[in-house]
Length: 194
Image (cartoon, rainbow, N blue to C red; front, side, top):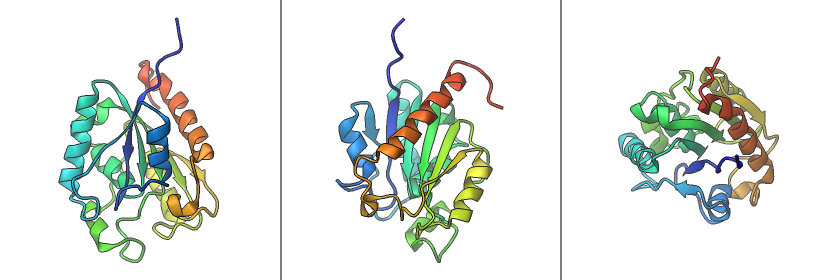
């Protein structure tokens, strides 16, 4: 029996989308089974439209997927977790979750995703947070991870973990992502999640 095929990964950018130097875009280019969920309007998010686009992408996949979300994309995952297609999600990497509840930290356009859902996620998850992210305090990111039942990884003083952070292909993030996928394997094979 050969090694299992790599999972289909759906890339979920945040407000404004992810430009060419963002790790999400680089991963999408490097790995053939990574696909971006395209939103109609990246600059003026509509929660229901973004959820519908994610739901359509999951349905079109025809298999269980892994999510790789950044910033507002993390709030999208938190909202989708109580939806009907959550059962088709194997795991989620949640990088630099924007604090949509804080007008001090995030722009008004993100408020359509408030309040941030704080229920336990029904799939394996890892939150990667920076100590110097202008869009979320590390303490708040820790609260999100605890509420979601996610592993928390401290990325140090990395800013918003975006193109401005100069992460390139972000090999450290890739290692975290691969560990998450490996950790989610027992969930896929039917073992109950504690």
